[in-house]
Amino acid sequence: MSFVGSFVDQTEAAIKNDYSKKFCWIYAGNERRFQSGVLQSFVIADENGNAVLKLTKKSSDEPLIESKGTLPFWDFTANDSAAIKVKHVQVTEIYRDDYGGNFANFTPPSPVKGKFFFAEDTNASNPGKRMYVCLDGSSWSYVDLT
Image (cartoon, rainbow, N blue to C red):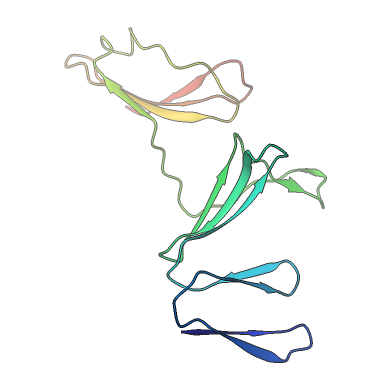
């Protein structure tokens, strides 16, 4: 297997990789290229070696972004926090149980600014479904989805 890349002056060179070793081609200054089908990660860490941000190209060639805590984005043009546009959001936090009907015995977790989740009361006589959201970091609001 060989890997072809271009230098800054647009000339090309090949890396011969007969033993299928992992490699990283440093390309155009800030770009790093890894061969297809191999798990590779780029880690930004603090002075103690604790990962702060990890960008991974999985062996399936799909991306994965991992961060320590919240992953904020900054919009330099707006000089404000930026939003991330996504095609699909899957909420994996769903509370589902018999909460006594109409969520009488349901206690949501501690509020976290920007967090949301779903809850379902499976009570036979008075079931319900809700979506909870915390906008200010101090309290939950909900929408009845029943």
